Image (tube, rainbow, N blue to C red):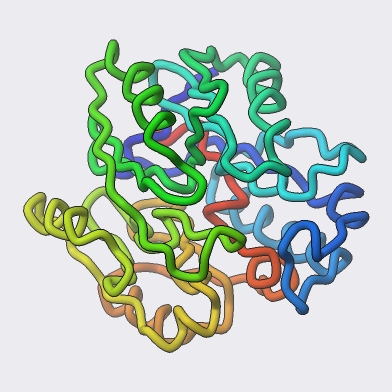
Length: 289
């Protein structure tokens, strides 16, 4: 099959998803740091609605098996890997409860015909929620709770033969190690040169780099960002400036619409808000073409 998802000037054409299933239905919210709004049955319905929107956009969904494996967070398929036009990179999770997921991704890529060009191991950790493409040859990576310097160095070694450069940026402490602050909690690309950002927590060096590159930066409303735990900013790009977000944040939606974006919404209180992962986290782009 075709693969390569780093070019955000192209529509989303193929994506991996995994239904919450039995693993989430059996999850202990305390173990997984899920909030009081968590409801596994409603989460299943909300996930299906996101999948419907993704499919209606024209993207093919490759469904990763949802086993009774105790891996509740495996529904957030964004994090254990990413896909370039050269093949998939298998990462190494910074959250201890998720360490089995990268091998699942490696096996699944084999099943759908996507080669693996590298895999992180040992103490080197990177989660893909900390990664986004500044351009097709430059990957920005956030160094923080889930992604460490050893992981960044290992990732740079994997990508160097393909002339892909890794730029690292330090993330703030914010609410601490138990919560999930990824780089893409603070910057959400809406196309190849436009992004929604939370400037107060965004690394200044990254902000300066994006401004220098000519990106349009939309400053997400502070009150909705805080009320959502950052999930108001977690936006999935289906086509350039055609996006999907969790419902309930009208000012953030209006900001994007006023910038020329088409915005679709789905209910995500029991899944996204409660479990700290939005539509970007729930999808692993395989191909933009």
